[in-house]
Length: 177
Image (cartoon, rainbow, N blue to C red):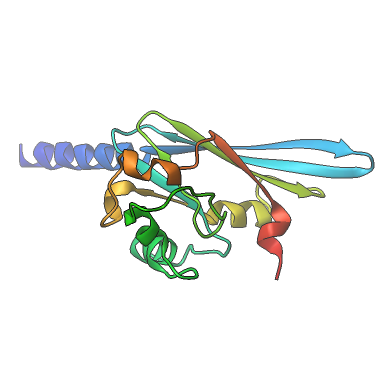
C-alpha cells in the first residue's frame, strides 16, 4: 500500500511539473526566400501563453542565459538608461507618449491565451540548430508578470505595451560588435 502511494505521489508530481513547463509554448519555424542573388532566412519564434497568468516578453541585445530571472528583470526594468529606468517611466504618471527602444524599453504583455511572434531576418543559409538560431532564442526573455516587483498590469501602463502581435528584428542588430 505504501509503495502504491509513493508511486501515485511521484506520478502526480511528475505530471504537475510537466504541465507547468507547457505554460508557455514555443513553436520555431524557418522560412527561406531570395532577393535577387541573396538568400534570406526568417527565423520565427511563436510564443503561446497557455496559462491563466500574464507574462512579459522582451528582447535583450546580449545573451542573458546565464542570468537568473531576477537578474534579467533588474537589468531590463531597473537599470538606468539615460535619466530613467523603464520601471520609473512605468510608475511616472506624467509620460505623455512612448516609443520603445527595442533593447531598452521594449516589452510585450502576453495575456492568457494570447500569442506573440518574434522573427529574426538574416541573410545567408541557416539550419534550425545553427549557432545563431540558438543564440537568438536565448536573447528572448519571457517571465511571469508577478515576478516583476512593482509592476501592475493595468491601463496606466498600456502605452508601454508593444501593440502588434509580432516584431521582426534584423540579425545584424544582434551580431554587431
